[in-house]
Length: 371
Image: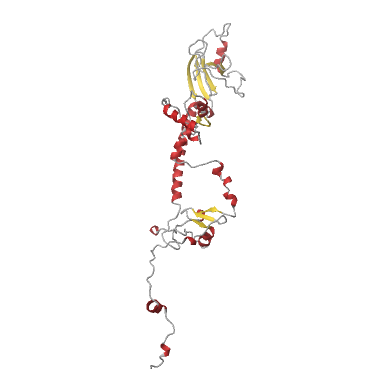
């Protein structure tokens, strides 16, 4: 028997001995092996569960899990896909402590009956039958027969102007209602903004007065004109006047602040209400004295002819108004292009809003290539 033999006898087994010699060694499980998560391990949601979703991934979690595993540790990565997200990406799907937020009766898109339509639905919406939710068999058979027998009249080339930002009115053309109540009109199912007459647009932008010189056989007349209208005399010399720029008589335009307060005031000459044509009554300046000195006959007609030889226009506010309209239309087109570019840029920025991670730890969002 050796010396101190019992001191070398161990009364226990080490981990290595148990794993390799006595306990038997088992092969470790491959980390890449598929392991299905048991269904009974999933959190069961009910009406009282606070449920949230991650916007970037669409995964749904209980708020308790996100709070304990993401918010408190400051670990803003999806618990399933490990994709980064921000606090704003957490969407409440159900919150028992704030039930008013999830009241369907208060949802804006339900109150306003809003719906996002795809291209097929947008095309179907243009069909007249789109508004028919349900029809009986008799009506359906009549409509089917109408589709087989009805031949739509040929439409001539549509040369009508389209409304833009400058001439678009805040009301429609009314063609939808007219085509619905009258069989003599073509079918119209789309509301279109009415187009404001170009002359009205020009009148709104005329802030200055016109200046012209009328040269007569008795001398020149320098005139200051309210440029909303002008007459051109009696070109035929019949005393009946000529045609207006619109081809016929037009309505009176009364301005309470414009009155005959003295000699030299110009006004329209007509034969009654709404019969304005193209005659011109002139007054004022030195030449007017010569005209007044000419004798007249029993009918008030001057015995000596007074002839307008030429007219010289110094300032025409309509030219400036046309230039302003042109600039406004160009600005509207440029603004529309700019808005489209902004929308495209916002969409691209929204897609690239998530920062790219280059490494873990401090400075993980810094690109090493830029250092």
